[in-house]
Length: 265
Figure: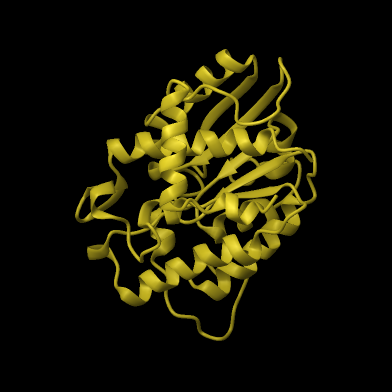
């Protein structure tokens, strides 16, 4: 099975998924071969964009799936990192800072490391909020320890994160591609870099045969363009997803989540 193709929702796939969910009552039906009584604890790490998708019906969708398929998939939303003491930043640098540079059994600035999270959760979902797409040009001197939003730094940080996540083969990780910016908050060059980062995550960074999976949220928001579609945004200048899009995205997210949970090893 080509996991990269599964990660990238084309328009046809989006419509097919929505039709499937409508036929099975919104969020029911089987998306895999999970056995009756399967149990799974899922952590969904997010900030405001993720919160909107969560409020679009993620927990309700998963509960309905459990009821109709006799599974026990329990998802918990976690603001990560918290505003205090670490700071309200959840970009590649911040996951690297907490999970790689400060890895270990002790929390870093009150934030759980992977050594802590993987003891409680069998699936960990994490994402970046839309400022991740405000990417500056490369300098030619990449630095894994730099908080500057540049593709060269993102790629080093993601490489280190992949190596770290693979140290926990009993845990599945689902990574969202970056949330997009609306056009008035970006420009053609920044939009192109944001799309390049999403495509790199799906086509190059994501590899078959490990415990790491991707959901192409950037493609869902942009339809393959450079910016978040205006009809999906809260306003022409606000890159948070609106309620209608959040409901759609919540269903697609649940479908992808169940798919990777029930994927044969």
